[in-house]
Length: 129
View 1 (tube, helix red, strand yellow):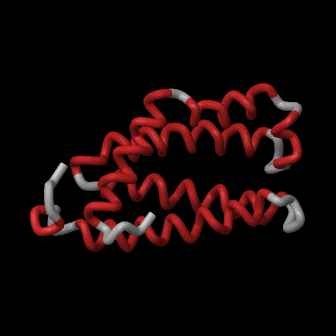
View 2 (cartoon, rainbow, N blue to C red):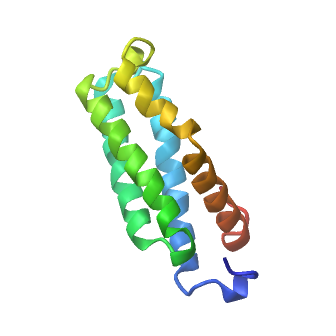
């Protein structure tokens, strides 16, 4: 990991802008989870987040590329499970496979990837998360 913003790769500013777009998409996902917008809104949000995560995993600076790969793989599994339950977030409590997909975020490799991404973002994107 670079020690200063000046040593960050030339793509850092573009990547940081992409990161902010993902953060905005994530807030849409959070609102769609409430269920009040319906399954179609959640489907749209899940699909948009999938697109953003795959793009970030492909364009991430080398220091965090594998970490974004961890996120993208988790999200791919989660999105498959959401599609399987027709984007009905109320099924989380009763669907074992969907619960398993969500609980994967508690695994050590996911926590490590999250911490590494957060540190890189803080160092190279002006602390934006």
